[in-house]
Length: 222
Image 1 (cartoon, rainbow, N blue to C red):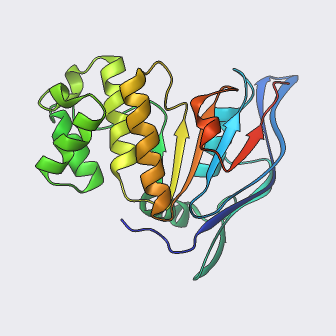
Image 2: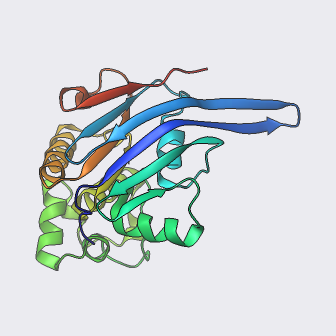
């Protein structure tokens, strides 16, 4: 996995709604426009229910938008992630995006270090050091299937930020975390930004990410 040189994501007036009942539709996102350029940190702020997670899932292609575009621009050309075919979308997502939403997918019998190493293409020693940086060194030999929910969340965050990607989409990465994890996560984000990656983070207003953000997009609950 490599950094896509000079890659920029341009989100132009995307909207997304969900049909809850036969006669009722919830508008979650309305004409959202943002840009994520190399080395930037875009902070997506909002209270619960404002559409932060929905927005990130739309950028990743997990949700298809109702209107608008999400264009990935690079030296090789431009691709609109909202209209491209599923095969191309999957290819781009696997190679150039790292995603964190608190879940961790790995064979349950894998020890945590091996799961991280496999996902981030690292050797055992480096994988263990990554876990130690997040205060999770003692979890290295614990099978993924035996991790508690809070433990799995830390390992998932360490794994996401250990991968080499062009775009990192982090959905409330500091939720419920202590100072050590917060410090490690923010340091890791600064490292990937220095390499030319773009980071998009969702958080509540006045989060620690505000100090690092190059731009802030506020979502309001409908």
